[in-house]
Image (cartoon, rainbow, N blue to C red; front, side, top):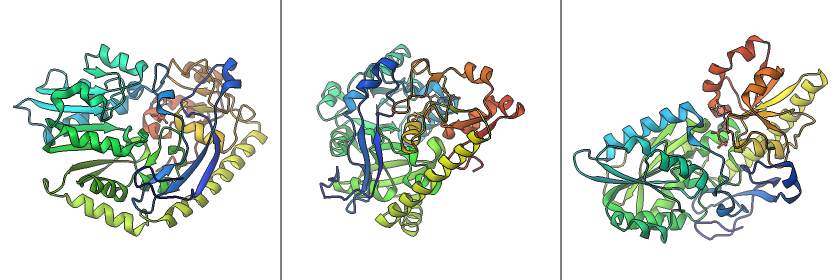
Length: 403
Ligand code: TYD
């Protein structure tokens, strides 16, 4: 495989086996047409970037069927509200007319917070299913991928954009070079590119290998983001840890020599050096951790089944697709997965073909064990599912739910 940024040859350090598209929830009639790819991951020594080898075309994922709605979590709604306040305070002058672009604006959860402000905001969102909702929320939305061609649709933003922001999207875009070129064409001299994505350091320490799936082509660290920014005459000027998605990082990038570099950058880079996040060695340790996690998960679930326990899944997340297909779990182990998303209910999980049902079904069915696939939303879910524990139910996960 080749590094998607530097072009160097990389030897994948592990494979999770054949995988379907992680958000490809499907009907029974479509089982026979399901497409699988080999989910191999490699590490670029030149830009310290953990990345997938093969993955399906983004056009096959981000279309009218894309089923992930940011607003499905109250916690995320409040996170995006805080994110927008932070941007306003730190990088947008409220007195003058400022310009902001969001890459992958989904259903408009973040951009809604700029309605009726002095900031002219626009979202790029190619998935029709969610873009439709965003437009309903009066959010200015272009239904296209973000790249050097499509930014021509916002000519008045070229060289005039104060902030380009994004959350859980940049890791989805194969052509990072084109992202950086587009950012370069759009930002003012002092403008910033701010993005959040799941953090490599959190994935390694939690052994949350389910962060890797077809849409997450990259797992970033400060070390990798700094290297990539430098290739385009930008620099990493700040980084702030986030609780979202089980451990994320907010990166702030600006043009070289235009900003003071925050202390956070050095502190976190030192942490990464100490933990070898800039070295293949940490990937090889992660590989061993994944193999152990897989054995533990399979054995624990087998043990529960032997005792006659009824097991279900909670949250038909994209992440669950990696767990279920890597550990080869299906309906012999997990009876159903409940979820709040109406577009997923009535369908089956990709590859493992477990029925997706409503949360109401979960309440009525009284399972003994619930595998919390949406472990990153545990606080919100534990809070609303207190009765499950009262009735003797138990939560299960491959990550530590006590943390
Ligand atoms: P998330 O972990 O955000 O996403 P990903 O798909 O990227 O791994 O999962 C969100 C899913 O969890 C979504 O399908 C909605 C579901 N969900 C519930 O069913 N109940 C809840 O209380 C929450 C917060 C999410």
